[in-house]
Length: 132
Length: 454
Image (cartoon, rainbow over all chains, first blue to last red; front, top):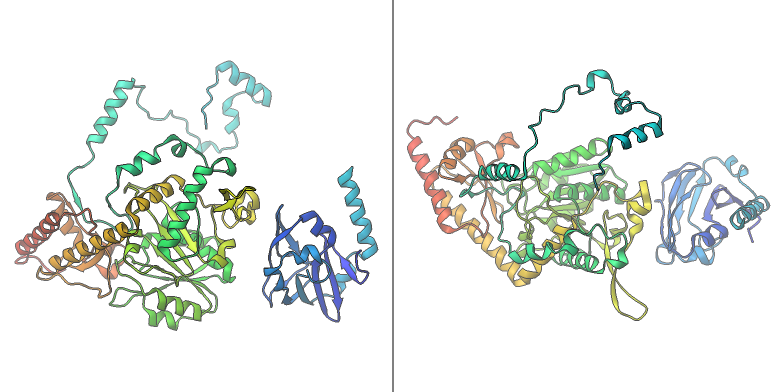
């Protein structure tokens, strides 16, 4: 379910690191909690992001949610396809529904994030909390 | 909100419940020197009859029978009794904002019609359900431009209404927005050459009024080009909505912030009036305020909803597009009824009458020796004239003839003393224009021998 080569935050964002670049998106758990996404607001290329800072908002039929940047860096690309097809976040949250790409400022931040197994356990615990 | 009176025993039990001995104790944290120890100096109680007599006496103190040539942001226009009769219906007059949108179909439809008419008037694609007034609408438009561009400097024309600029300054002071003012030329319009020389590095918006404070119409297409070349947006403020009956809609502007008082709202001291923001569809998510939209139910029947409410504070809290904007639903309704009564042809005819009367008045006043037209730009129903003497003194004399003269713009523009801003709308009879001209002429002639030129 959750790709093994991604790292995950407690706020349900993922980051995939390739070389010095990190691709950021929201997890399948996050998209299923949000429901149908209708609008995405993303930063501009060149924006400097700090870990924990808001990179934008995702609006679904249920709510508007902030998306937090799991790692620091400079935005090198944003997924413009989402402005016309925000549903990609629901359909393929870990692939075509990516949000931004960053040039990592501090690669050690990645290690502090959860791996797939830890995130799986984290989400399971959340799900139990909900059903309890 | 209801006022709930309390008996002494109820007060006692309330104090006991929170563990306080006296009401006084609740104010202990306020330093002694700031506390009011004397009772308020109020007259004793009056009977109902006495109160009515008191207010009738005050009302009789209002001046009557004066002819006013004041405009400068508030305009005297004819209003139909139909407007007041309709807006005073209880369904409109007493209803609160339609948070429970689906059961407020009538209110939502009225808002939808208002938005539609405003779009048609301004040449824009989307308009909100109204704003508090024109000045706060202009400021909210600037904040919108700031969010859209991620820039924090505003270039504002000195030809924008001075009080509107003050409102913007008040907001800007605490929001880290830098304001730079751009001067004007002998046309009475913003100095486009000076604007072109400005650095646009951090400029979010170029802000103008059209017609501007001097009554002159600005060149919106050229200004939009200049703003866009610098990566900024053009915000066009409109204080005289009736001008849109004849002036080309500011479709090239990115955001239009308008005061709609001219559309069916009587001039009154301090308002309330009604503002509105209209903009391009692509900017709608940064538009503050309420939006009514048209929708269809499962059976295909037309209905109305509050739409894109995620921009608003009851959903978005501190991240809302604005937490300090309010709307003026009742006056937006008045404007809608007024515009509907006039119709497209009626609004155009009304605007033509304003223009014709203002031009007639200006031409007659210009025939008086020593009176000069300082600005060459095109006008609508207001114009500035320069006189050989103080406007304030002239106005003092005019008052004796029950004429409220032009606004002395030297108060706001020290470099423009001896210049008066006149407003002439369709309500002004020709005979009154001629009386004004005769009074000023007489005044000039009687004083030209001895009066010094200072």
